[in-house]
Length: 181
Image 1 (cartoon, rainbow, N blue to C red):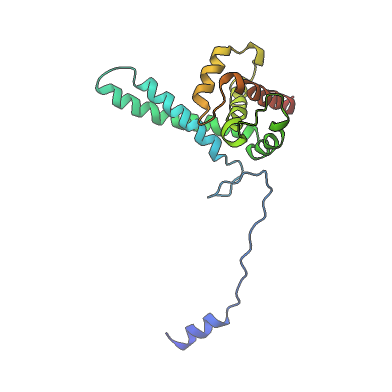
Image 2: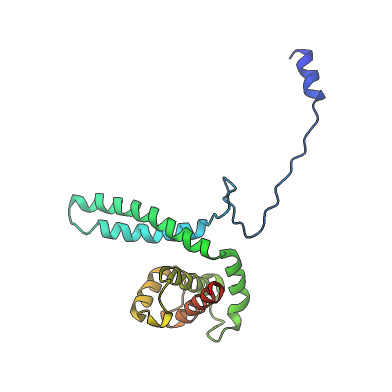
């Protein structure tokens, strides 16, 4: 290496690396840094809608079933992801998780045999999802059977039966309403 290049390299000052401090509720995108990233909400919406899209696309038997199912899954996942992101943007999932994590043991429906992460958290999130998808509906006007079947699809690994989960779902619905009135 020529001496003048080596001398030039040594003469440059070292710039310290600094990290930008962000507000905790900005939910920045991990790649772009743009606010409003909600990968869980987007993922949940995409997964649920992808399954629904695949089912709808598979109605016709034969070769069309495979193509229709795959196309339905892709289209459903894209629109479901956007819906999931919309729900997640309407609430701060980090703040809501922290709130319910500290409150759920104080609720009258609390059962110490169930955990927050595996059992109650999905019920609270489903309550928010139902509220977001029914903005002009009163909770008492919802069909119990629709809520029950929706819970069976949304509950992931929760051990809560619908009759146990519906109270947490209602709590999340009511919290949404109290914060958005």
